[in-house]
Image (cartoon, rainbow, N blue to C red; front, top):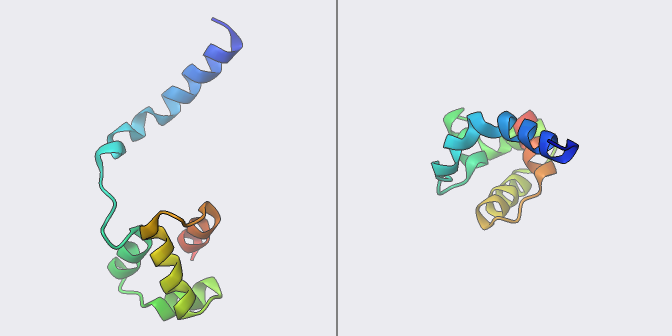
Length: 80
């Protein structure tokens, strides 16, 4: 087995536990809004934690549902 195959095999083993997530569906409102709502957090509260306005949170959630959100924005929302 060459180095490329070994690398691919190791990566496949790392992602295997998450294979079942392929069949999970995105919440209609998006993950950010769904998790924010589950935490009983308002857009204003999330905005304060992220250092952005309530309107910016609304735009972030809209970009997620449109499929145009950046990974950096998702990381920042997750950290908040």
